[in-house]
Length: 186
Figure 1: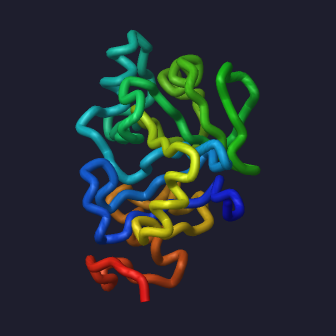
Figure 2: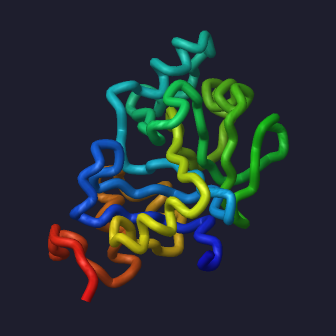
């Protein structure tokens, strides 16, 4: 196995036509010999955060929730809420540290805090996640389906979702729009 790609972006190559991953950027939260797991960070749904909170019967006092779309995080467990965020604050039940400044929480208590405007400063709320079995992601990378780049918080939290695919590729010095849809090896 190559070195762990945890805390990296997976950037879909233009030729990747899978309907779940076309032009996607995945933030990898886990990558080991046993498999990989990540959140797609550039596919907003039509569900606004305030609607999700109301559906979960969580009071929403956060004004930004009305204009913050929930992301489609991936095709696995599409009803499971996942929050990528900074500032662990140590009070959420099911949080894992992905990097020095990025955490993944999947417990409802963080949504309670978000609804009461006491959540993390920077966050993405997604439904579902992407997952690969043992060796599957490495095979897809070898088949030229993905590029990988070290993740950064600017792309993750401040770049508009519709610009994340191009912005993540630019971290590698690539204008992804100029890459061919054809795949192959020289």
